[in-house]
Every structure is written in C-alpha cells, then in structure tokens.
Length: 103
View 1 (cartoon, helix red, strand yellow):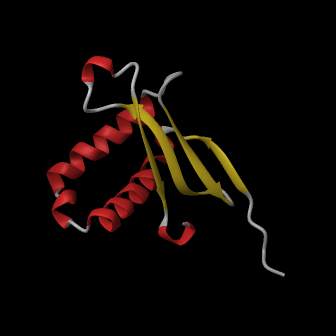
View 2: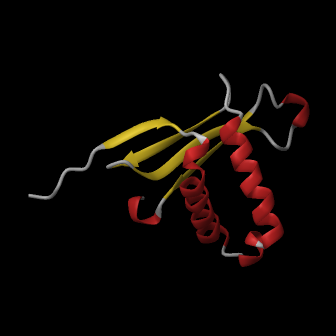
C-alpha cells in the first residue's frame, strides 16, 4: 500500500521565502523558456518583491502555501495589481506556482 502524505495549507511567512522563491523561479523558467528573465539584477528585484509581499500581507492581500508532509510544494497569492498603482488597495493579481513533481 502506498504511503499516505499529509497535505496542509497555511498562510506563508517570510521564513518560507527561499522555498517559495525557488518554486517561482522554476515555474517562470518552465513557462517562459527565457533565461534572460532571471538575470542577476532582475533576481535582486524579484527576491525583494516577494520578500516584501510576504512581510506586508494584510486583510486583502495574502500568500498561501500547500505543504506535503511539512514541505512547501506550491503557493497561491493575491497581490496588489502591479499594472494599476492607483488602485493597488482594491485590485489583486492571482498567481499559482507548484513544484514540477507535485503538479
């Protein structure tokens, strides 16, 4: 009989950042197939963007993670809509990223 894993969902914290970022980077690389997207200057930008998002979650904007046996395997976010700064407090972008082996 196969082992049964335990799946939990919880709001992510800054402590989850490194794994969350690795899942995002894997997803972007697979979806876009453009290594130029992950240049070192953009990497600094996106690392700061996601770390700030994790630190600034409020009643409107959150990031949830799915954990299998305690390991983060995917995440879903509602973050301020970057293309509409005048209404950041009202509009959200939704993103979902899942590790390749867990899709």
